[in-house]
Image (cartoon, rainbow, N blue to C red; front, side):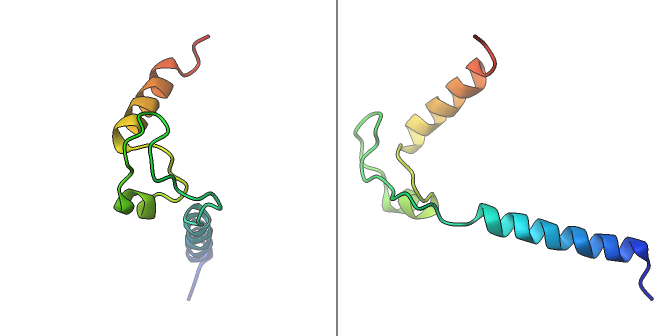
Length: 74
């Protein structure tokens, strides 16, 4: 016999599944073949794994580090 906790856990599982599905939707943007920062070729595996990618791994790491370091600072 199901109780309120069972129903809530089932609801949370459905919400989580919907959120994961939404996050995995493919981007409408095509992936670039060349990095927009350094003009290095972007490997096919990266273009397939990250739809809409426009930078190589190195430049993306630099971009994320800068965004993290300068976030909220004016």
